[in-house]
Image (cartoon, rainbow, N blue to C red):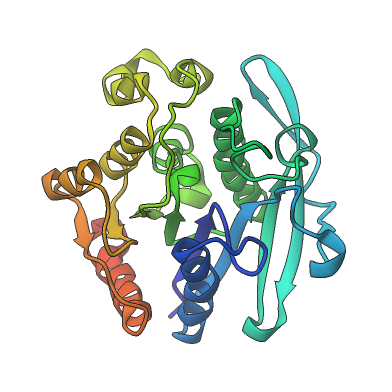
Length: 275
């Protein structure tokens, strides 16, 4: 029997970005999942504040060279990789000179939210799926961590749904309390280039706040996990109202087993994979 393949996609991972619970879980969850007999891949953005020499990042030439068009502008996709030796795992980085070379993550040096965070999110989510497709590595589970990954359930279900590599993929979204108070660009749905058939589902993104991104991801995912001990009221309400598989917050001493079991249960509930 082949190993279950789990793709982890996170907006930040230790030691590259050491900012809170999300970064910590995104570092140690893939390792613990691998130790439980599953095959893994891990992705995050390559922010300009990451020291490439220190962490020995290098470009993967065979995966780079693709382009993405966002709002009628062409953006080269660069893929880099580094290894966390202690965990025997690799981390793939989505890079682009315009979006990810600045020395900050989501805010500039004065604390101002980057105006193009919506396009950076689009580029990152699409870049992950394009890279996985080029790798030819078919994940059974995609586990998303952080609002920067909130478009992945939509892209998987509505844009990449005909791609053979994702034919049997189930997607999990973890809801964290690490967000923002501003709104993204109101033209987000236009930049997504969604057809009219998805207009109803995308209405919530007419006002692309942190809460609404979470609501959208929860509605589109197959399973939802409370990644933080306390999530805000809007996300908690959306989780209670969904008919998707839900896993409540798990403390650090139990989450690895609980998440692994959640993946297994989600796959067993999928009639395509269970047949």
